[in-house]
Image 1 (cartoon, rainbow, N blue to C red):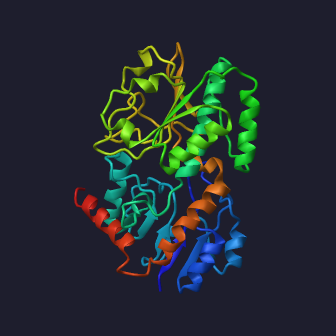
Image 2 (image 1 turned 180 degrees about the vertical axis):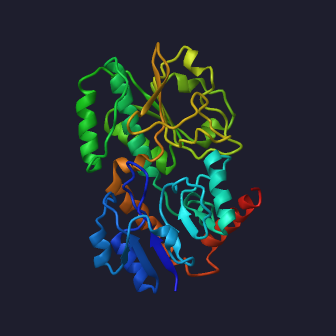
Image 3 (image 1 turned 90 degrees about the vertical axis):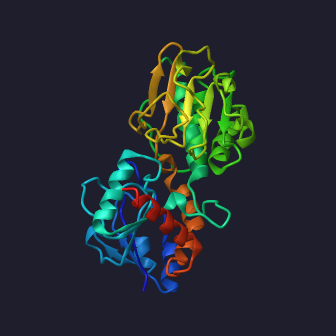
Length: 351
């Protein structure tokens, strides 16, 4: 019997989940065992999982789970250096040269464990089977707009908090925008045809911010891209790789520019492929804006768990996309899981 163990997230401001009680009930009905760690911070109450038939286990008890249990979470594990013997389904951030990712692979190698990275679960056409992209784009645009509002007030953006739903977020931003003059601001979105880009574009347009949408055709020449500097907002919404050109080069802050806020929603600053070359660390909920130039101001917004700003909507959306793939977990010949295992083996061999 396949045993899925839903762990409680241990990162601050992370309240999302990749499995709803309804999804857990479907897994149980299909013959799987589902254990759910108790969590006071998860956006869905633990009691709802118990009512769905899940076994409830103590928070953060996954290291002692049976070795055949598949540990399922979203964000990173505590970096305590311990060997990892289980199979983990999570966003590992381990395949693009990230320093923390290598440490994760070393721990898996030491323990004999496996990473089935959520970012690389793809269908036969190479498209991800589940992604938080739309809500990442929506929330990333929201925080970036808050950064711009703070600039127009002569300030730097302060701490941000989750919102109960998207309508509440839009209403709050509309009220704040009405108090400043950002009427000349425009946004350029790279990756506009993807989920992330659609989310960012939809929020901007709902707030009356004109959007220039770019995708692969507009960036195929490899740069430079002076048009980025002509917009107040730039949103990077693509998954970068070895062939991705630099969108924002190191000299951009000193250039003559209308650009005031970079929303690096893809947020991979420690990757060798980072196309936003003016910062090297993610920003946080407590300090969402990293100011990289003072006069005129240029802020980078690069929070790496943006969908947690709208945790219920983003969790329900992601979980519904992923459920059919989780239902296929017991099938040894399932192509999605096979590809994930092959990719892990390839990267583990380099450690």
